[in-house]
Length: 104
Image (cartoon, rainbow, N blue to C red; front, side):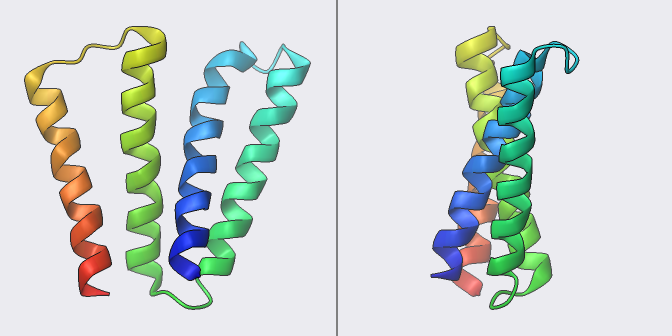
């Protein structure tokens, strides 16, 4: 269950990171409220997962999920570059996340 909570926390991490783009500098009320709600949900779920997981592992996985998801959605939604080197680096982050899961 703590790994599931961590996964959901990571998805909310992606949500608020992408949501920041849509807030337009916190001038748009609905995207701002949704972004702040995602921030709170992400941190609360991370905190719950930390009751059972080592802090270094959980934090690295949480930020890794957020980083990978945000980078991919940035490419899809905002036209961020999708170069081979960039995709390879994202693959290394995924490998690190899986490695941390396997050794925990």
